[in-house]
Amino acid sequence: MTTVLVLQGPNINMVGTREPEIYGHDSLDEIHAAMVIHGADLGLTLDFFQSNHEGALIDRLQRRDFDVAIVNAGGLTHTSVALRDALLAIDRPFIEVHLSDPAQRESFRLVNYLTDIALESIVGQGARGYHLALDSIARRPGPDRG
Image 1 (tube, rainbow, N blue to C red):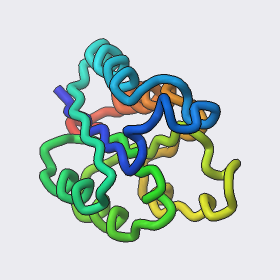
Image 2: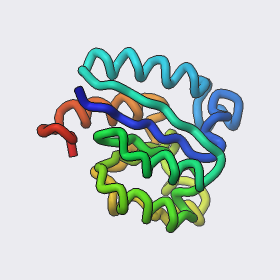
Image 3: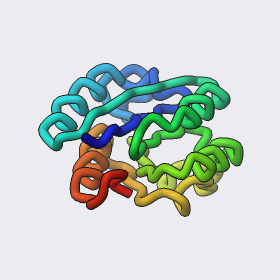
Image 4: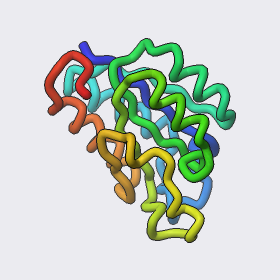
């Protein structure tokens, strides 16, 4: 069975209450609960990790106890070379997900340190984006689904 790490960056724990017009009304727990159901239907095992601390996210990635990741790096998408380097170093494929479409927001969000190394980027789909990422992983051949 393929194990998927769902890595959530800074402030993602605030979805549902933080700017719901941008990020939606579902809480992170609700998003994750729906993902568990959808992942099980696809034969995927999910493990969730959220942190507001860059080093904790990197430490979690370096455990390498997963086959593929879904990464919503939040604001670190636009600032963290260290997170990018960690994603390259662990040699695990990942899909980048953003609830909103950063390219349609402030100009500083046009910088993205992850998109060119991701299998794909799913943006602007709200919580549905995570389900689309799971669907994409399930369609991929091979043990690591990369």
